[in-house]
Every structure is written in C-alpha cells, then in structure tokens.
Image (cartoon, rainbow, N blue to C red; front, side, top):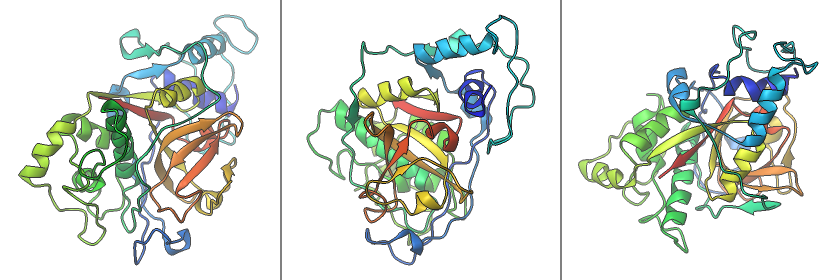
Amino acid sequence: MSVQLWKVLVPALGLSLLWTACKKEEAATLPDEQTFNDLRLSGTIEDDPALVNKAPLLLSADFLTAYRTARKGGNGKPGTTTPVDTTTTTTPPPADTTTITPPPATDTTIITQPPSLPSGYLITMPSVRHQGTEGSCVSFAVTYARASEQYYKTRATNYNDAVNVFSPEYIFNQVGLPDCSGSAVTTSLDLLKNTGVCTWQSMPYSTNNGCSVAPSATQNAEAANYKIAAYSRIPDADLTAIKTMIASNHAVIASFTIDGSFKNAYPGFIWKSLTGNSGSHTMAICGYDDAKHAYKAINSWGTGWGDAGYIWIDYDFFPVAASAYTYVMTL
C-alpha cells in the first residue's frame, strides 16, 4: 500500500492522527500589501483526538469502494493485508496497521453524490483578511467558512461585516493559546457549535490588543444567533466528497504542512510539492478546477500574498500536505 493510500484509508478506520492547527505569523504592521517576508513562523497546536473521533465521518461512495477494495489486499484476495510503506510520510504511522475494521455505521454517512460534478466551481467568499501577528489562521478559516454558509443560507448578494462576516477575534480569544501562537480546528468548531460567533463589526479583529479580551455579554448574545448545528470530517484524499461539498456551497476546512514554495506563492502558482517543513497552517478550501487539477483555498495573509490572497493546491498533492481529515460544517 502506498503512503498516499495509507493516508487515504487509515483516517476512515477511526485511527486518529494528531495534527497541528496553525502557527503564529508575526508582523510589525497589517497592510494587505505586506509580503510574507515580513512574517515569522512559530508554534502549532494539535487537535484533541477525542474531538476528532467524535466528529461524524463523511465519505463518498467512490472512496468507500476504494477502501473496500484495499481491504482485500494487493493480490485481491480477501483477508490479506497490503504492507504499509512509511518511508516518506511526514506523519507517524498508527501503532498497529494490521487490525483493520470498517468505519462504524452509526458514525459514518455516505454523502449523496450528484450524477456528475461540474468541472469547476467557486464558492463566493468574503474579503481576504490578514491575521498579522497572531497565530489565528484556524479562526480565520472557520469564520470564512461560517460566513459563506450564512451567505448562501440567506441568499445574500454581498458580504457585510455587520450581517454575514464573522469575527476571528471572538473565536481565537476563547480557544487560542495564551501567547496567541495557535489554536486547534476541532476546538474552534466546537465553540461554533456550542456558543456560536458574533459578527466582525461587533468584535473586529485586532493584533494590537492581545488575544485574551473576553467577549462581552452583548457579543455572546449575538453569537448565539450564529451557532452551527454540527461539523463532520472528511478524509483528505476523498476527492469526490470534497468536490461535492464545494459544489454544494460548503467550504472545507483543511490544515497543512507548509514549505517555502507555499510561503512564496504567486499569481498562477499551483502548489504541487513539499520541500521541508515551515510549520502548519489552516485554510478554507472554496473552489476547484479540473482543468488546473487543483483546489482553490482562501488564506489569511492579505491580498498581497499568493493569487490575491488565494492559492491553488494540486488534487494529488493535497493528501501529502494536508492533515488526515478536513472538516465541513452544517447549519
């Protein structure tokens, strides 16, 4: 079994992989024109495996078929196990790769796939913002996704900071590390589920007031109006499931190991290889294009980075750089 196939199937088996959520990017100022060279990377934080395993698993029928085929082993005979190649993986293999059980039916949903997916699709997203000196990429990714959910739910025609753009400050100040260096995806999504999130206008994002300012009673009351009903996890290599979610206007939250080429992304760049490790980062996947063979992600480093604040990520490379699971929310 190849490394990539191991990454495809092991998450679906409920064998949790710890994954870091994000890092601190330090900068003296916060203009959109700021380049990545002004930033400095540092700490990360892992998802709680208990929260990861608690999230329902979404799979496409295509992915489940591949899983069942792989269970038969490399020679196609039931009951055999294909050896796992871990020579080039950047994440540790599970402690026991010989005991394979299918996902529990009560925790797994096979998504309804359309007869055919469009060859490309882009979700209308809010404006690209800049996280500046705090490791708040997770908070930006989840609030980008939450904003797009609100936009499509209400059939809006534009984004407005007082109506359907939400506050990363509200999320990060409650779940981030005390030194403002990072936060975890599942913890952030749990906050959205249990508490909600207020609008950007009610609690604007700032890198100048630390990350410990607690929300007010008024902000909490507003946040309660914008809870999510649930969130689910999707294996990083389930291309059909991820594309189906995007084509249904659901942004997909994903964490990545990043490198120098990612940091120096430019217009037209498609991220296809990983050289070294410069930390971990979280973004919202909001589009795809079969002609490019790539997903499109919105970042939180301002419009001066990448392709006006976005980046394209090759389909086949995505599971190499991404964490074991991606996440999608429902209202």
